[in-house]
Length: 194
Length: 337
Image 1 (spheres, rainbow over the protein chains, first blue to last red):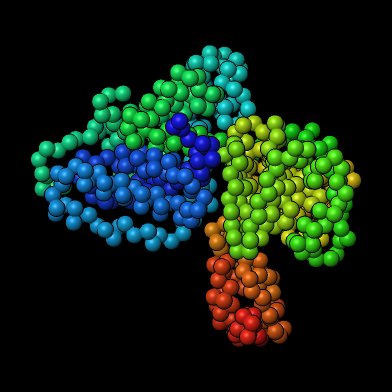
Image 2 (image 1 turned 180 degrees about the vertical axis):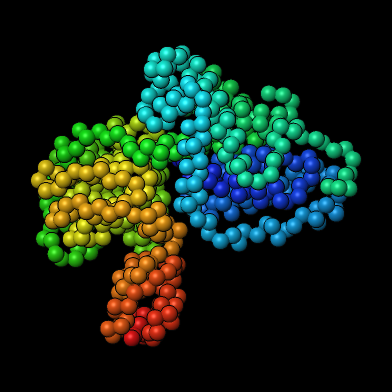
């Protein structure tokens, strides 16, 4: 049965989410072929992190995630087989060093929580009240609906919309546009530009 | 979803699934549909994991903003068994303390507070220099520092944790609505959505609580304990003892982080007397320090050090303080001044 345990979600929330901005910026600097999308890499890497048996032994989660993303990237590049040799060599392998100094975990975490807090405040009503009721209390979706005068279904839809919007914002305040809406182009011809 | 969906299309569907999981148990049909969706593309599980993690973060962000959680003040002494206090003033080593706990007369097969008869309680221990993180069912975590023992039991409405000895950091999410109640010596700490550490290195010293996020409720653990109740908020440290009550001090966030540097394998000192600093290193390593001379004992040290490198620390400290460092025949670390 696929899915994700609460523990893993909490671990990702504490150890990976605060660094997403920095990780995206690093990935974007890898000078990728046009057909590879940063968001695809991020999602696949999250899949790998979610599937690991154990994560508590990982001392430097940010470096671990970045290394895993590098592997995802290399596998994709090899799979496409349409990238010219030159452009592969152009990729700066020095970027892949995991000799990162220990990131200041507490500061990154606190900063992201502040940003999320502000993002919650910026939500329109009734989405904001619905989300605040859900994450700060023990109210179920139906109870929230009763309280704000909406159906359980409507509450769920509002939560989904808010979550989608917030998910877009995380990790994207810094770094270049990733063009997430661009569908993957499959090149049939070797592209000298890589 | 389309033939080859974009990552944002996948993210949109992932948000729906994350909210559905958050709303309650999936029906059999929903579960089948979910499993099928996960199988469609390697990115799906990742997008779902990310969305779920964001929901967790929203919960924590909310606590940070308000700084207050509601407490169930009724969950208290009824569950607790009195633990006879040993004579104060003697430095109780961990072994002696555990041995003592075993000789206390046990009433109704309950060994320590809150634990039920058919005890599903689990004990976790770290050796010297070891650190462990224990996940709790609702996604909360307990991180044990060096030389620490805790006992954990989950019940219908409470998650009970006994800190027998040592230091632990608690990241409580409370996503299942349960309250988390921690006991250390005479002190009971209730937490719902909060991050804080608790330290008790000997029974004759106060229980130290450092709150990073959210707030905790501190109460006496038994009816016979002479202690007030108080709420300790984020960015403060409380020293709790029957003798002196609850003494709270506000901290800057950077000071809180320093207190928690051990979680990243470091020790942070600011104007700490060398004798205290070396005592810290003895918690994490199998070494003994000998400080000889007045200067060696009283000079203070500042800096960030690797907790598992006592020799490196001694060398650097000696150098910066103008003291002499050497190692004895049995591996003792000697600092003279």
